[in-house]
Length: 151
Image 1 (tube, rainbow, N blue to C red):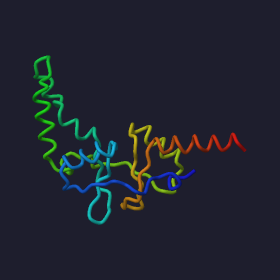
Image 2: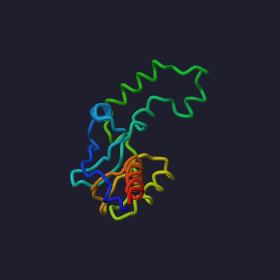
Image 3: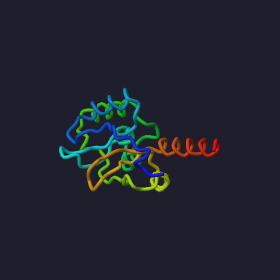
Image 4: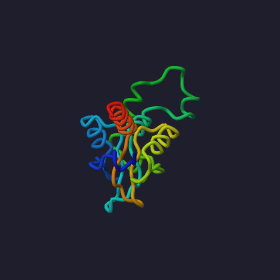
């Protein structure tokens, strides 16, 4: 089974100059945890996830080492509010693993497992053509098993 047989081609994506606030709203309302970031020519330039947004709330290692033993939750909320006003390009992950549509879906799943990610963009060259999630792979394998049991 190939990635092109199970990938989603109706991909919600964002532009690098989008506000994080708008992206967070789409993620929350659409119940998705990440979105590819594309330029005006549909080239994949990054990915933004809930993790990218939320990690800006937490102190970095240097700050944590100099803090009192108790985190400042009010400061964390303030940082989150500040993050919502940022542009996607400021916090997105720029180095993105991708797969091709002709790749076996289990190879794509292996890549996701190794990188500890739940979704991976499907590209042709640098152009975004779809996305596949670990859930897509699981459903496809499960359905195939059901078919094999019936025949």
